[in-house]
Image (cartoon, rainbow, N blue to C red):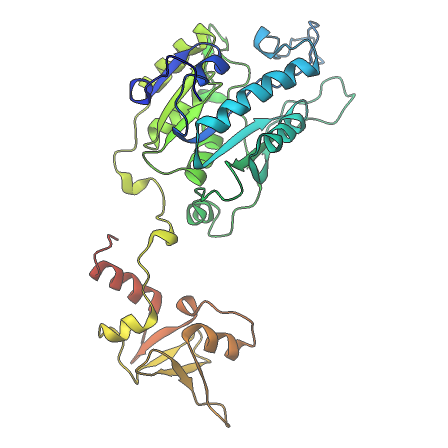
Length: 373
């Protein structure tokens, strides 16, 4: 249960709350957020010594108090506390993303599972331009890890598979993402210095939000920093709540988000999920007069042909023996000698010299049935 003085979500949507993450989270209502993106302290265990490049210039490192923990036990206690609150405030069908490095991610991963989250993926963010290991005593640390977990094993979590596939040249998105670190004009600076030592690139957050949330969803970032989550959420028509302790980061984040313009057309946000589309069986095209019994379907190269029956099944009688028949899927598989076939992609309607993908006819039928394009 939340602590006394529960915060009304409507009063903090699209704002940054200043305070201790755990204390603020304890005041949020149960099951109130759709997704959590957490970029917690990495506990880098850096000494106060200044790391230098070969030319003796100083390397920007995380030496702030918020990343300092006296012991692993202290870090674990902190992690357990915020993860337990994350579990409580996340909706049953929500999911959580946690990013980290080798310093902390394995400890956090164990605690995620111990808290009851259900692991979905670990994502490798491979940096195209990592900072070299100037001392030459270790491999260059060229990646970070994102853990993606559902609230529990039965969660009906959001995953926009088609959008991820479209983002990856129509190939299923893999769990290794190659993206540059935050630099150039995107890197926020104050008096020539980095405003935040671990500012994440907007491309990374955009991919996370498009993959695992929908427009209108409420995203919680309990370690808000310079506000990347809020800026991307605003651009992509998501709502957000940020929690941040450091006043200077809050000031930077608020200014950044205020200067972010949302996409002006929701149709530009992402592809609709196929799971949300109206179910249109092949027989519906026949019943609706879009395809007539007796017409011929062909595969893209026209080496296989089949005629349409009145019940929506197909018959292929160019075998020299017994004809083959079946649904658009099963007959397509038989003709190719495969176990399965997506008949919607395989078959085209032949009308004279013109061939029409039956998938296009299905899309037209959906519009007729009232689903927007």
